[in-house]
Length: 358
Image (cartoon, rainbow, N blue to C red; front, side, top):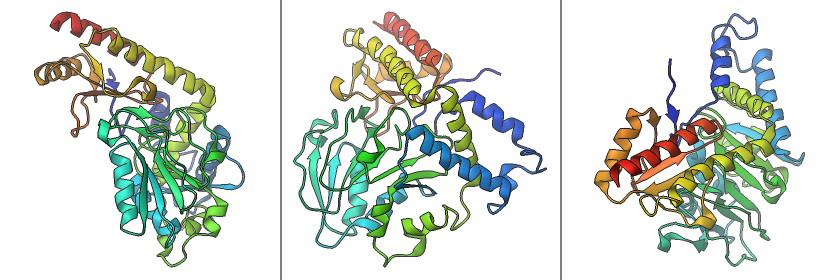
């Protein structure tokens, strides 16, 4: 069996070693005579999986004790609503830094529930950069940003210091590099980019935030509910959490986040170098200072050439190189599980394609 070079934006590549481990345990998990998918979420074998995933998150990200690690459902889209439901106070606006479609969606949901304000935006420049410079608001409920923008291929390199609680959607670059968790009051991320399959959403939230949250909302939508129940208030996505735990083990075996970050920078640079040396044949969407290591976006000279590139790349064993429907072009998502060899193969193909079609 030959596996494709998987550059899909999400659901995305999962390490082959993880898939093989899951395959070996699929029918009989640790002598239970059942698959993980069949285990009761109240059983000891599953409880061990659940707690191990949480512990590994804490270890790899160096999450301080004053934070809770939660496993929820609904993806980042549910978080767009849950965050303002819990933390957006009357007369105290939520402030948003706009860097793409997902920050737009987060803002739209919050605006349905209370007062909002935009304090920084790169929309007028087609979201080609991250608006890192903005006036820090002195009052409000929180500041929200999106750390990496899958559609436009931009990424925050450093994070702002704010007087207010800082909330970040890290769905597409969580655990791709080392960060200081203590800079944030809440981090959330859908798993389907770097952490495993779709179905589970990781939330890292400061306990202090939970103490001051709105209590007049349904229990299932309260972070405190899930915190008190160890993310077992309702049936969790057990198989997705199991896969998450295997991915975290794999990350540790690779040398942790420092090693993963170094490799991700190498992978991205291989493709960006090909773009920069093409003499304009390939044109990057993002400004260089805001380039993402996760999502490398670029265009070709015209639509006909783009279609030819995507067709020929598919014939060569590449998958997921089409750009998002909203901006077109091409996109290579080089998440943690995408091997260096795949990025080298893509750069080689891009060079060959340019010579052929110049």
